[in-house]
Image (cartoon, rainbow, N blue to C red; front, side, top):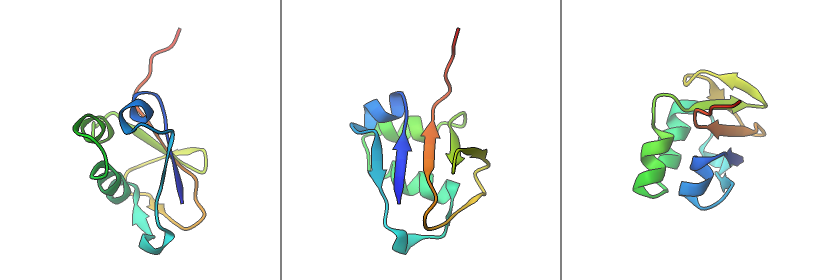
Length: 83
């Protein structure tokens, strides 16, 4: 599975995506987020686990208890401002 990372999450991780083994699925978004956080720097871990980070699965924003399955596209987004 390919996990997309945006904005500061991408910067802290050092890449715009992360690979995750389909063998470990299904997982909830929260389980996936915690597992992915353990693979990065302290800044990445802190940013990814922040309570205001949101996740989209197949381009739809989901709750942390949503189950991620094989073939899903997952993206993590930090809060952003715009204007």
